[in-house]
Length: 240
Image (cartoon, rainbow, N blue to C red; front, side, top):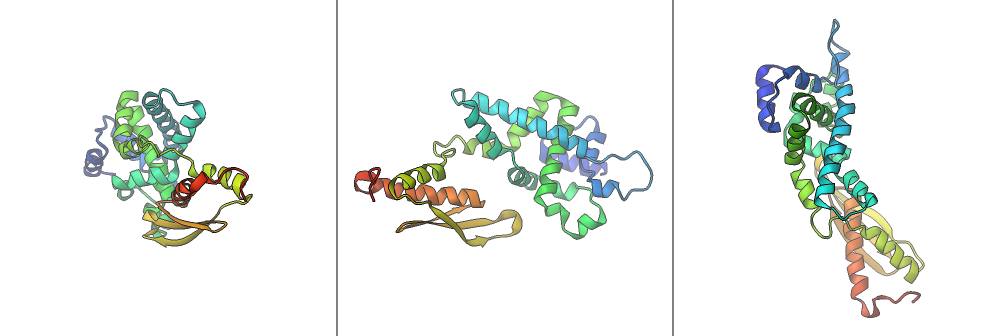
């Protein structure tokens, strides 16, 4: 990774490195390092390990500040929804991280720069490099900037509702049945798919849309709950 690449990426990342060897190492995928002759080059797996912990710490810190009244279980679920391979890979794509990753020939041939697993792992390595280079305050700002849209989304009143669980509880009591979910359509490229899911329980059917199967299922469950709760008497418990 040359100086021009580092400077270009620094602008996208919103952080300037004092020690540029750290960010260079963050982009060394193991497949690339294994093909290099000689010694001294390290892959980014150790940085990935540290970055995973740093992201969890910072996101946990932010969630505790934003939601002072939430219990540990709720905070843990929120963090898990924010800090996962799919979400981190999407963040990586917004800063064109893939174009800077150094890959071996095999990974290059299989379009490794578009793989969510590689993008997410490399993003974690980059975060570790920022932490080692600038400390906690610096990495806090970087994470807050690049996860801003995800963090802001969970401030919506309905963002953390588990509609599937609510619906399951209601229909088990009311109908003694379980809702069934089926993917009926997938649109878009592999790295940016939209899913359509159909929910069916007894004579009720709804369709939900989302950027993952789980989100589409939640959307379908939310719509089913609205229909059931709008019915006269809201299907009193035990009614057949």
